[in-house]
Image 1 (tube, rainbow, N blue to C red):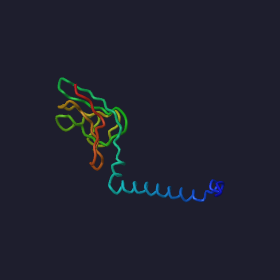
Image 2 (cartoon, helix red, strand yellow):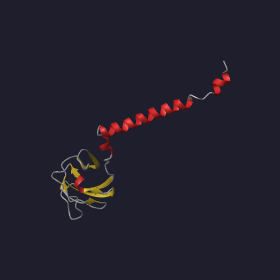
Image 3 (cartoon, rainbow, N blue to C red):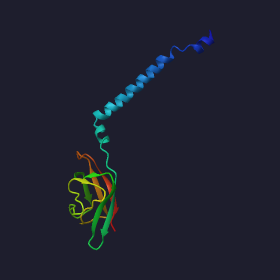
Length: 138
């Protein structure tokens, strides 16, 4: 047996690498297609916005004013406020009822009734929601 010929013989290397690459590509394609077929791809594309809020609590009448302090602009139709006595009412400082909520726009006063006031974002199709801002009440 000629050992030097076995060491220098590389005819089988190329087909083995080719098979490994084909299997890897097949597995990746199957995972991507499976994700979208099962509907998991829809939720990946809907990321919640990043925003910060200032909260001004008035403990004498248990009310709060929330101001968009910075970050992404928000669609008012996708924003709600939790932990309040009634539906949020906007003020002349900047309405959160329709349009785009930008940094500096404030809401009107509203009574809070829980230990925490939350700003909640809901996706366009209503399939997911996330708290994007919260503050404990005094």
